[in-house]
Length: 398
Image (cartoon, rainbow, N blue to C red; front, side):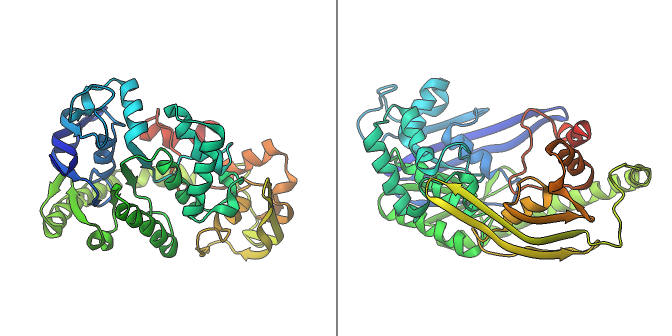
C-alpha cells in the first residue's frame, strides 16, 4: 500500500439493456501507483472509458471494490484509509472528486457561455475553494502553463479543438488534485497538438502528479511509465492476446453484419428509391457547394479574431473532399459555413446554387434537415434515447 494510490479489486460493470445485460468490465484487478503515468490501451469498445469511470466514481460499480489512499491528512469523509469509493454517497463522492481528482474528458465539456478563465475557475466554486482574486490568478497561471495566455477571455466556440483540450487540462489542475484521469485526450487532434498534450501530462508526472490516460493509439504504449492493455472488458497480458481476442470478435461481427445486409438490402433500396422531397431537387448542372470571399470574424473581450479570411471554394456533386489543417486553422469554422450552423461575417455560401444565408433561420433549418447530414466530432447523441431513437430523431424534426 505504500506506493499505491488507487486499487481496483475484482471490479465488474454490467449495463442493463433491452437486449439483455452487457458486461463492460469483467473482474478487473489493477493497482495505480503514486507518481506514475499509467496508460490504459485498447481499441474502441474495449472498456477503457468504463474503467476510467470506475476509477473516478462517475459510474456505479456492479461488483468488486475501488480503494483510494489519501495523500495528505486523514480523509475528511471517513477518517479511515484506504477509502472505498463505492461506499460513498453521491454528495460524498462529489466532495472526494473535487479534492482528489482532475478529469480531462475527450469532448472537453467546457461551458459554452463562459470564457476560458471562468471555465477554469468553475471547479473551485463547486469545491468551495473559490476566492475571486486568488482563483482568477490561479486560472491565469494555468492558462499560461498550457500556452493560452492570449486567449483567456475568449469563449470556447472561438478556439480550436486542441486549444479546448488544453483548457480542459488547466481546469483539471485548478484544485491541485493528486490524480489526473484523461479519456482519449489526443484522439481527435492533429499529431503536433496531440504531442503537445502528451508532453503536458508527462511534465505533470515529473512534478509528482499521478496521471491515468486511456487511448486507442498503440504507438503511445511505450511512452507511458507503465501500460496495461484491455480487451473485451478484461485486462490481457500482451498485444498478441489482445489481437487474438479482437480478431475473434471482429469475425463474429463481420458474420452478423453480412447477415443483416442480406436481410435488409431490399428494404433500404425501397426506402431511398421512394424519396420525393420538396427540398431535394438540386440542379446537378451547378456546383454542389460554392463559397465566394467568405469571412468569419469573432468578436470577444480580447478583440476581433478572423477565423476565415476570404475563402473561395467550389465543390462538385459526387466528390469526396477533405479539409486538412492543424488545430485552430479554421476547419470546423469552414464546415459550419457549409452546413448553415454559423453565419459568415461577409461573403456568400451557395449550396446547389441557392444562397443559404439568404434564407430565414427557420427556412434554413428545414433546408438543412432535408439536404445535409452532419457527423459531429463528438457524436452529439442524446443520452436518454436508445440508439434507434437517436437515429430516428432527425426524421421527427423534419
